[in-house]
Length: 388
Image (cartoon, rainbow, N blue to C red):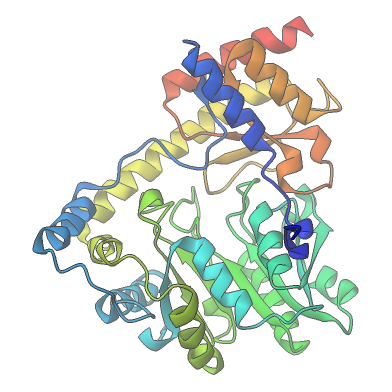
């Protein structure tokens, strides 16, 4: 009997950067000093108070399932966080604790998207978002965006491209790979337009907290009829703990409960207890210190890339990425990244991992390592481009 991969896998795109990562590991095994600027994971450890809270739970030995929606105490803390941070009231019953933001996406799209329906999103964007839609038989439709709109979708684009099969709109702010924010006015317009069209609005807010010079706006400030995806991974420094959350509209609570029971059973218990300490004062003080450090790293990398001749038409306002135009040096950013790694042992991410629009002319640099290492990387980059 022949074994065949499920047809749905044909619509799932790979991470092209994985080829770079594999080669980077080979180079490291050979003794090369590889500088990593491709990973969306800062070099900071998980804050001490969070680790201690998780350890305390583990030491009891009572690491049992929680309710599928998550610990009520944690859901209440998140609700209080929305009130204090954004001035919005969110019932804890609408908050679901998930295995990372990926789990939140699967839950949100699984309870709201039907096969054949279309999800509008920006190009460039984080590749998993379109793959999640494809997994459920929906059709991701990536609309080209540029610096003129801060690489964000607009209400006019939504109206222009909406048709009978359209079901939802996804906005990520701050975005990956560009680090840009959608303005409050633009976000409100897109939310209201989507709601007026009878669609579902999904707000990817996993980089909230990691913003520089201004505050990020949550879609919940403009409507309760939105899905909001967030995570403890980025701002709270809990990537490997695999814990995030999803806020759903009232009408989807029952469906979310049912699907969570079946695909997760529950999010990791010790991670949930650890996350209870994420909103403690001492933790937030440390996280703000780290945010300031990332802002300094952004400014350092931004200035150096510009000096070297890269184009950055929109300075990042959040997250920890710079999406740089490398067309002065190459028409193939993927090959550029491969050659740069091979010759200078610096790993960066090619634009093709984030879509097709001008992908061959763009590279993503992550400022997730120390200033000293970034300085060394910039010296290597200058040497590399001067060779060409």
